[in-house]
Length: 191
Ligand SMILES: C[S@@+](CC[C@H](N)C(=O)[O-])C[C@H]1O[C@@H](n2cnc3c(N)ncnc32)[C@H](O)[C@@H]1O
View 1 (cartoon, rainbow, N blue to C red):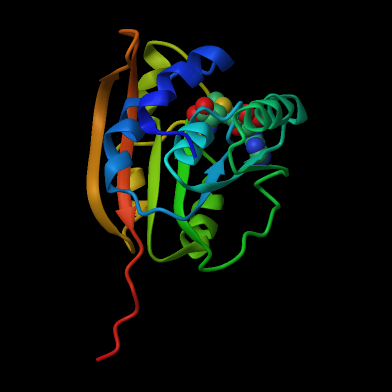
View 2: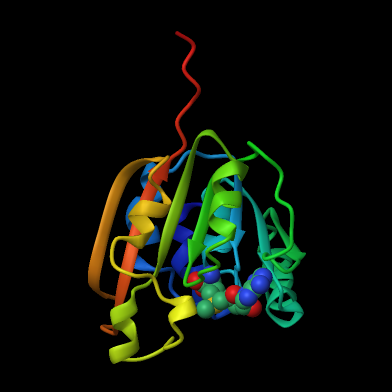
């Protein structure tokens, strides 16, 4: 495990992109354990989450990005397990993950599966583009853009700890229209 203060150095050494501000904001509230990074890309969030003591299963359908992540994880000796799979057809284990992170990716049929894959008490971090984004940049395809309040409806059976929609700024000053949620899967009640 590397300490949090090392994360900036690690990022620079490995030329990793900066995590999304929403992920950094909620990081202190997340439980520790087994994390699923959905459509992980080169793994900026996988590295962040592994560097603070989690084991991370990082799934993407691009072998090219997974190869980069594999090398970074090896270099940093972080417990990140890259998995090549099409998330549209990849059965996820039920009640398994302490945290699931879904950033800059939208596969609507997958959301129900992600909720099933969370452990009771586990948390979902969902942060991706809103429909308004098409006016200022990419993506433009409505298939990859959330309608207003759509994310809140999709997560209605979880407990929402944080929810926002709007124009958000990144560390480099670039802005994008986003919907962002932190939600917890309720534990079963034994009345
Ligand atoms: C915009 S990138 C986001 C990467 C990462 N979540 C992040 O925030 O840096 C979207 C990623 O989704 C992956 N992807 C697209 N369709 C996929 C699918 N059906 N199954 C798995 N990964 C997919 C792409 O290969 C790409 O790495």
